[in-house]
Image: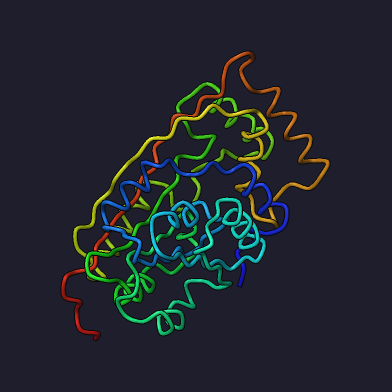
Length: 270
């Protein structure tokens, strides 16, 4: 059932993945008119980086993920934030029909899906979500920024060269984050009957520590592909040596979300 993002990888994810800026949640709230009467579903919620901030703006958030370790960290993040209106469910996109039967038609203001969408069968998922949305509600597919090794900076170029030298292959985009992926999701949403499909973009600027950079890299591996020790320590040291000396690690990144609304009148099931 799981996707392999468990154990140490889940720990790296929880500790080193940067969250989303408040501007993203402001935009989602305005887009879907969230109120304190609303419920939101975060599908593939991971450690709760979308679900927990959303919980402060709505009545309830249900986070679903196939990895128990991810859900454990999400629950801990919710507890730290005082987000007692969150529920964490072990499951995946394949469970949406059963979950939908329990939630009921028109019960959700939004469904949020982050980087995990590329693990899902989105052509089947999008039509299944449509009946669960209330009028004015919709789906937000949130693509994180370009991976750390594909950004426009000296340190990112150095990181990319270091990873290529270590693994013998040039690292590319993370699944689901490219413009081509977003275009594919937008077309699938329109084909499923959603309306007003469009993108929004917000910026996030952070100064990273070297530990955050290295931990962020390790968080992109699955549990099966994460380098074992001592190779992991050797790679961390190589990354440290490769970075430009004395320069801050400034990440100036764009976060893009594909948004789609449920139509005022839902189409009849075929």
